[in-house]
Image (cartoon, rainbow, N blue to C red; front, side):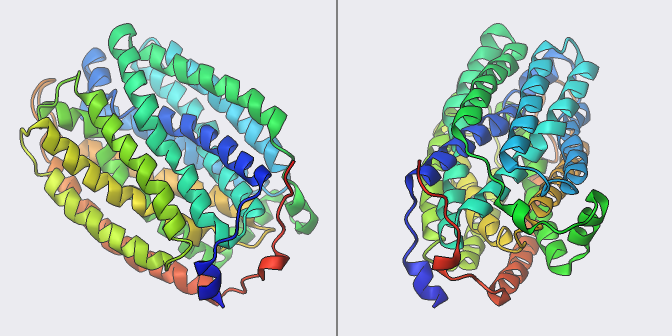
Length: 424
């Protein structure tokens, strides 16, 4: 029965497609705000005279504050209309990004990143809760694939434009540009998104603190939390120093860097929807395992490169990121199937929180592992991060297998019993 359902994905109605679009453009700005720190890493480190450890702290400041915010939000995440929560935190994210664009020095930039993380780090969890409320399990692989296109779109359009702005008008203006886009999206969400409040009908009568504890106390939930946290470790270690590695080790020029990110982004736009759709037809764990093994092999090759032709760097970067991105849709679809409707918001908030905290620790540790003696010298020990990605990849495969077992034992509702919002 399950196999039959997997081979015939449910169609998406018009309102569901609208929701996907709204959540995708929201994710685009949030991902871009975080991702742009990596390509601007070389610019920031040189303009502010930062060490790799200081830059790692600037990156992890967002992640740590996002993690703290997620824990505080988890207790009451299921007590409000998810549209209102999304608007509240997205407005805060927009203000925080404006603050980043106004920061005159390193300490105030770190403060601005903390403010942005407090709000931005919860948005993904709210989006995942909305997805789980509105879309059936047989649709979520495709939905996750389209949402993750925000990652690819940020690289195809956002990062090259942001790098161009940062190179010609300064890195402050890149954040201002993102904040202006986010302000427009706030208005669109307010007008177009319907209330998402069906979960309030089944909400149990517990205090926010009790709800937080009861959610975290469930063993199967903790397995999901640990799985998501481990998924982010290797990437968070490598990503902040990607541009500095490309420029100082691989000898990619600053003018070529936007092209490198754009090519990788185009790949993401192609890969993510395909993998998302495929994960609705094929066993999600198998897809995740194949993608993880591919990612580990490519990471070992890429992190051990020396000065290389641009085409080779592009090819290997695309191959590595294809593996990284192909893990996301099947893993996320499985993890989001764990919680019940009354715990969904709390689960997603805690899940996102622990992911951000793990990522923050990874970025800070990465800044301690990677060393750059001078502003223009090659990064040292970057290949160590490749070996760490392999170790984390093996652990991820084991944890996702455990999640698969939990989901397979759960009572999956019949298709006709899954509530679907009618089109408008």
